Length: 547
Image (cartoon, rainbow, N blue to C red; front, side, top):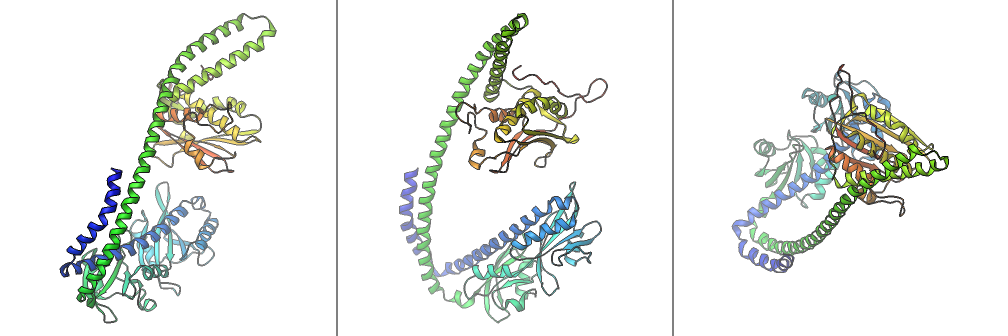
């Protein structure tokens, strides 16, 4: 298939060139000109939409600021003003109280102040203010007209405030001039037919109504081609296209004399077609080359998966057999310990028991990795789990690491396996300790998930050295470790991933080198188990590792 693609890339330019020479005629030239103009209008719309969506996304991020949630208006305004200084074209940002229907502050004034409600903000509030909205031309101040973007600020899934951004239309004028055909009469108008940008007489026409030809065209259709006359008296045919995002439309006027000079256009388009054919051939060649690379990468991944599957089968068999041997060793050591009266043998026997327990824990990790041992999934009480783990985790991380637990009462019950979830938290704590050789802070907290409804996030956060992206991408791979040879099995995070996956959850890693790491265990929320007295009683067993 790859050879065929390369052959097509060599032959296709000649075939296309000959076909275009024969196919183009006087009857089709007009349609080609119209199609080109429509394509240019779509291109300009796409560029403007990209800018609008970028500003809307930035405003949505600001709408989630903790300062807004905490009603710290001065700090919130400072945060917004800081972003405004670095965002091109941001003239003003307004915070409006939806319930009181009054403005709290605007960055243009530089300080909080109660202001009368602007008409375009009042119109947005009247519509419910539940989704972002991009307006057309608004404003009557000396530094306007502007373009407004509204984004609601939610509290408990209910819109409480509105952030309104006032944008400089001059940036859209620059885009129109950059993308529109040279020496053309082109324009961008809003949903009401008011000029946002225009290649001719822009300062004078900004915010004024376009001709009735323009307004009638956008009232009838979202895209098309219509005859008209500009304010300057140019008779033309205009291609227009309307954005599904903003409702704005871009209009490219083509002079009527250009369409009458079809023969000149035919010669020009023939040359353009030849260049397009060569570009298409180059594109096919590049595509074929990329497909070849993708296939080779898929083959490599397939080979790696097969290797991991083979390792998993081998590890599963070894784990079961080794577990049986460890049980015999552990039981024998327990009996010797019970009957031993020689103090000199206490320490060697205890060391042997600890080694046996560590071996059993490793077997558990192998079984979890290979999934040869299905987990018993059910409700788990995180409060009981955290209380039972506190001593073990503090001993695991050592005195140089401060250990904090933060349990949200509405994020107490999850669906998992208590014993395996304990082991997962111990593995994460040990990894966090190794990432903080000089000490630090380890925080384990539960909270309702913001990323997925009906779930609970268990965050494990350390203040260690963090991980680069290439390590994050491979962190969950079995047997992958960054520790020196002999100091890590590479199964810790694989066990965590296995436990959470079998619990129908997911694991996310957020880390920056030098700024610590947060590992999020996202689990389904569970209903509390009730005892005979109607009190919550979850799965609270805390077995010793290896039992």
